[in-house]
Length: 180
Picture 1: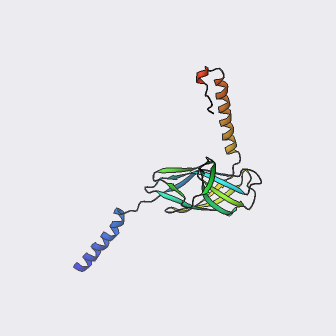
Picture 2: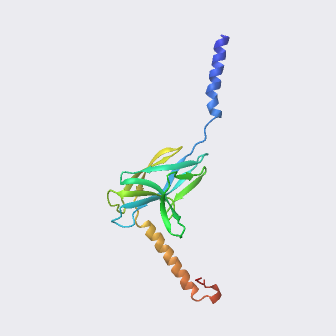
Picture 3: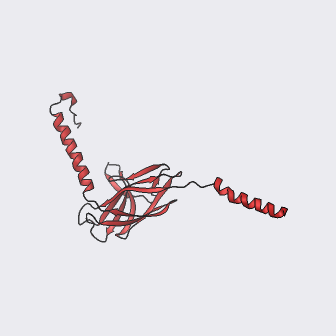
C-alpha cells in the first residue's frame, strides 16, 4: 500500500506542475484589414492592417500566403542613400510586441501581392493566411477597399487647403517660409 501511495503522490505532483509552469504565448488578433491595388491594370497589390498581440510574449509575423497572386511577401519602405523610397522584402518579418500592436500601413510595412492572377475590384475579398512563429497560421478574409486611402488623402488635402486659406490673413512671421 505504501508503494501505491507514493506512486499516486508522484502522479499528483506531475499533474499539478503544468499549472505552475504555463508557457507564455502570443494571442494575435487582426483589426481594420483592407487590400488595394494602385490601378485597375496593376499586377501587384497590398494589404494593410493592425496586428494586436494581447499575449505575454512577443511574436513574429514571418509569412503570408494567398492564391490571388504568384507570390506574397512581407514588405517595407526604406529610403536609399539619395532619399528615394524603395520597397523591400522583409524575410524576417515583423515583430508583434507582447501586449502591443504593429500597424501595417501605406508607405511602411505591408503584405505585398506580386503577380496578381486577376484584377482586384472594390468589394472583392482576398483570403490570406498569415503565419506567426508562436501563434501559427491565422486565416483572414480581407476586403478590397479602393476608396479608403483616396478618402483619407482627400481629407488630408482638404485640411491643408483650409490651413493655407487661414494663413492668408496671418501676420507674415506666422506664415511658413520655404527654405531653398
